[in-house]
Image (cartoon, rainbow, N blue to C red; front, side, top):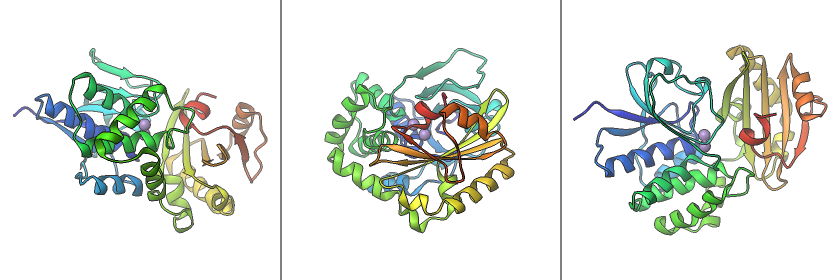
Length: 302
Ligand code: MN
Ligand code: MN
């Protein structure tokens, strides 16, 4: 057999990174490429763990180094979010729905990036374009990834393609979209029982903005009030993260799914940049951004 090709998502993996890797490896295996295997770049969050257990899917293999590996990247293409030594790996393909990042790839590759709500939407589409029906467990995992990234098709990142793929996958997986979405959101766990560090770290991404390293964490909850009552703790956890990783700025987006907006907190010297970008004043209690639900579409660009 040929040398293994790992399909891998970003560090601090979310459900889209894990399930897109599993889904794409399954598609390639079905097409006869047995050497393609799913991998993960970190430990699973509670939502993803719930999804894999529900559909009896094994946890992908943990990969900590890219050096010497043949890789297919899903759900990321920025160096700061990839395995630390990504420049020493061989990237063969990218399947993505974020901004085009800073990864230099020396040879021509398949680089598929589309502004859809989840990478899993693109993977699901590939199954259908190849006239292959994803097995029920894979359909369920891909659907979970779409609902997770789009907050059950409510986020402004949701595209018509996501809306078309979701019911098709739901029918194959034998679940109902709204009920399954609620189940997923519940599997994220209770804010009250999680430590402030865990809340900041769980969905934390680093970005390189013209040489300045900025960390942006997001917590998406049905009701953000429990976050507001813990903001002192959260800001302390953000400060810790900032000094540990040598970042110039750390942002926390606390998205309130029912209010369809986000609370924003920032720590670091250049908070003025954030105030200017969002035309707000950032007191210790942060600020509320109405209608803001997406880090990718509404925070990173500004
Ligand atoms: Mn992701
Ligand atoms: Mn994604």
